Image 1: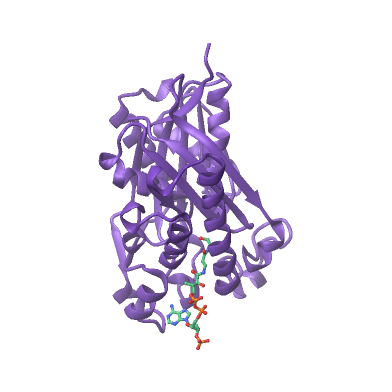
Image 2 (image 1 turned 60 degrees about the horizontal axis):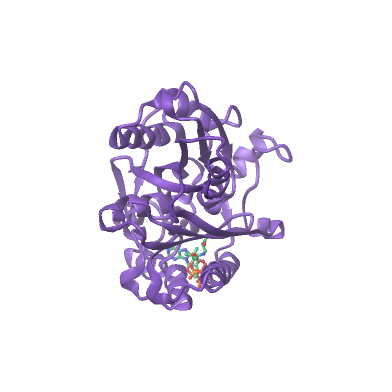
Length: 329
Ligand code: UT7
């Protein structure tokens, strides 16, 4: 029997209807549409409104849509992995809640946290379950309600983030398609530049932590920017080099959407033109674990079987990675 590979056999995304524009942000903090657009490329982002709704609601919508679209019954799914930094609660895993809400009665499920690289790390993890023949139908969800950890009095972070979810279906194949190669990295010393100060075991929630606004994203923009530009570009060039992929071989770069300038630098380093880069940061902002599946979902109709895609991300941790995918349909 030839080697099993994991192919992406379906993709679906979901964004909540409420749109937070740069104009509305101008009424909330000292900022301008011009600053946000020129520094980040973001025009608007979607926000999940409503009492009692969380990341699992975003994820469940994406999963239900994926199942409907692919004609697969919820009971057929063996495993669901959810990449998120905004779980519904500390425990149980949001993946379990998504599985429950989407009716996945036979799946085992768990969360994975690698910040903005989470979707890539989850995809690689899931692919191993498929390549070994252990599971036949695996769903990877990237879902984040970033608005739940965004401080809307802090102009340095509140303009960046949005809420969304995306879900991918992985299945085995003996063809030379699917997840072909992956590179990943972490550097925990980078945690000082991007983290949430309180709410974990080191600094459990208290009146003091709430008063000090420590349950929100803390980001030092410039050092994170510097690392992100270098790492995302390096790792994307490296995966091309070690697989002998020339710019002409690449159908699309699918980058994490944190900042248009980081995306541009990555594309330049790979030598691919802008027409080959999936960019939707203008409409969704940084949705953390959902950025890459949202891109694939929006570009799905343009993709052809055998297209070479380079998925690339950089995020808190620090974490980074790239995956070479040969599109399966
Ligand atoms: O996805 C996970 C990984 N995260 C990232 O990859 C994010 C990486 N970092 C970035 O994308 C950028 O650093 C930011 C978009 C966060 C910030 O852009 P920047 O060009 O690095 O701006 P800056 O932080 O150097 O700030 C420049 C100026 C400052 O004013 P002064 O000190 O020059 O007077 C800021 O106070 O812009 C000011 N500023 C703003 N002005 C208007 C910061 N935020 C805003 C704002 N509106 N929203």
